[in-house]
Image (cartoon, rainbow, N blue to C red; front, top):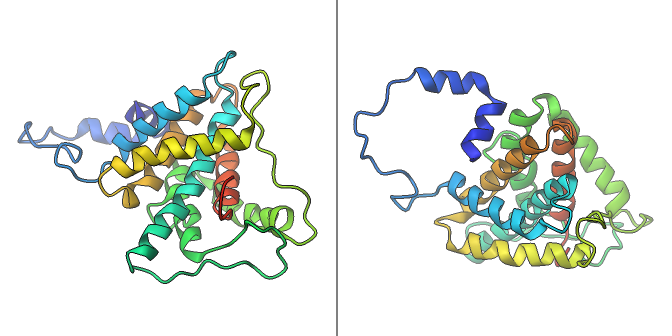
Length: 240
């Protein structure tokens, strides 16, 4: 299903793939069969998990669906970095920026690298080219907005990523996101080398969700919503 969304969004690559001859060995094992990292397989699991969790009495609210993937992607970046620190692979650089009064906010260059480094195979590196091409220019603007509205000492309340009441009236947004993250951890812990596939998997799931609801939410809006939510949630040290 993820492959189908990628085909819709990138018909040129799809045509190139169709022209290539098939593999000589049709019994060759796929990465998933061989126990290797497989972002597409993990993405399908994450998509199903979030879809089931957000399917309320009135169906799925598209904007909340896309924001949920962004929030989980931002949180997974912190999870990946914490695991790398515990393994002794990188130095702990989590810090509280000067002038920030939010007790749960810390920043990390390692986390930023996973969330929005366009030169690597990360969340935005998959999300931006496939969804809105020129959207890379949004990143500094989104970061500046979060610094002003989310982290500054005189900032207002936390950003409100409220799930529409008619869709999920019985679950507060914070509790819903915590529940989604706890369920997501089950997938990540069971996936081979999730530390190297999580961001790509979340990006593929977000692209698929955006493609499903393109008639209701323009792709450019979905892309900005996903990036904004991912960056904001990547700066929270605990909870949502």
